[in-house]
Image (cartoon, rainbow, N blue to C red; front, side):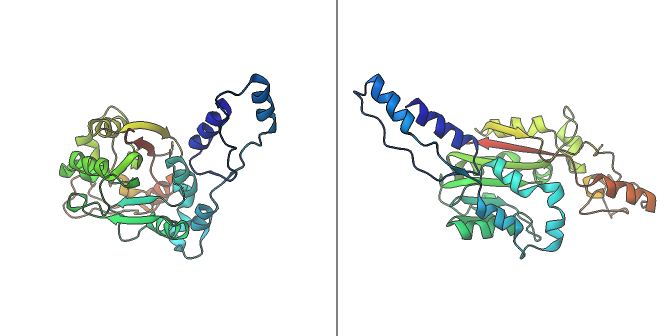
Length: 275
C-alpha cells in the first residue's frame, strides 16, 4: 500500500507526466509479511513519460514565428508543466487577446488530447463551462488591468466557481518590488506578488506552488513607459494621455538597452481550489 501511495504521490508531483503502466491490484487485507515482501519484489515501477502532445504543440510549425521567438522568455513547455496541464483537460484562458500567444498552444493541445479550450473575455458574463467543471484557469499578465478597474475580486470569484475541486488557477504576471502598493505599481503594468497571493487566498484558493521560471533579474522596472517599454511591445515615445510616460522619446542607445533586458520579470504561481 505504501508503495502505491508513493507512486501516486510521485505522479501528482510531476503534473506533465503520465503514468504509462498500471499498478497491480491492491493486496488482500489478510496478506502476510512474506506475501507482502514477495509482492513488492515482483512489482515493476511505473514508467513516467513526458507529455509528447504538449511538446508537439509548442514545437508546431503552425505557431507564428513571432510567438516562437518569445519562447526563450516565456518558456511555454516548462510553464505549462509547472501549472500542471494534463491531456484531456478543460482549460479556460482569461482574456487571451488578439495575438493569442497562449491560445496558439493550448487550443491545438486540447484538440490533440481530447480536452477543451475555452477563451473567456468577460468572466462576469459567463465562464463558458458549467460550474465546478474546469481543470484549469489561465491568467497571463492581466492583474494590473483588473486592479485599476476594481475587477480582481469578482473575477477571482468567477474563476473559483468555474473550477472543479482540486482545479488550478495558473498565474503569470509582471512582478513589482514586493511591499509596494498596487495602486502605485498597476499603472506601470507590474504587481506585487504578495498582493496577488493575498487576493487569491481571499477568494478561497490555496497557494500550491510558486516558480522563478519566468524571473528576469535584469528587469529593474525603471522604465519610462512602464513594462510596455520592454519587448514585445517596445513603446519608445510618449502616448497620449498616459500619465506615467516621460515627455521625450527614447534615444537609439536607450532603445537598445531596454531591448537587451528582454521581457519582464514575472511571477509564476499555481493556486488550487481546495478539495
